[in-house]
Structures are given as structure tokens and as C-alpha cells.
Length: 143
Image 1 (cartoon, one colour):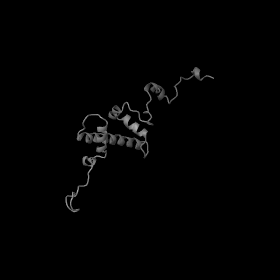
Image 2: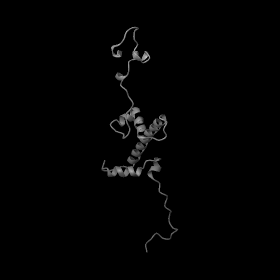
Image 3: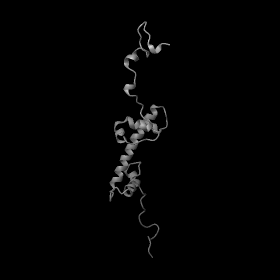
Image 4: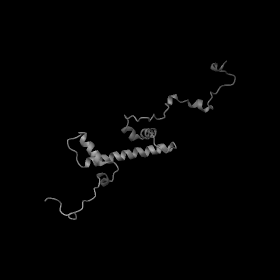
């Protein structure tokens, strides 16, 4: 008869430890490895490639979430919405370059008024109204 012998014999199998926990990551190394193999990016995929890629993805995600959390806090909100992600990405030089051609759904645009459309400094110093000489009347103000 074949078998493993008595129930008490042999070594007990060690508890399985995921590659993510071995690498100290939150992102799934096994899933990234599977996606690399099924994506046919290369004929073969080494053991270190999914660990490295998962670490890079985790770092980028943490960076974006931190900046988006700061944007939400600046707007006195407790929940991160796509608008906060958009503001975080577009206000950061490196992330803006990385995600330059990416559209974030419901993100909106950065608040920006071109300098040509802003009122001139001389008009703004007069208290908002155009300074007039005494006794002159502008044609647009006549009734």
C-alpha cells in the first residue's frame, strides 16, 4: 500500500506566505505576475519583475492618494473624489508629465484665467471704477 505513512509522521508543512508579504507590499505580486504572463509582453517573465512592478505601482498610487488627500483637506472635505485626484495630478510637475495625456473622469479642469483677460493694474488701483476728470462725461454713460 502506498501512502504517507502514519498521520503523525513527517514534517508539518509551513504556513504559506504570499510574495507580497515577503516583499513588504500591499499590491498583489502574484496577480501582477499572472497579468505579465497573460499579457504576452515577453516570452518569459522572471521572478523579480512582478515584485518590482508591484512596488512601482504601489509607490505611484500612494503618491497620488497622498496629494489627493491634501487637496481634499484643502477644500475641507473628508472624502477624496475625482476632482481632488485631478487637482493633485495637474498641480504636481512630475505626475502631470506622466499623466499628461490621461483624462480623469469627473475631474474638471484647473482653475486658470489667462493674463490677457484680467483687468489692467491701472484700472484696479482706482477702486474698480474708471478714474474720471472733473467735468468730463463719457459717452457710454450718457442717457
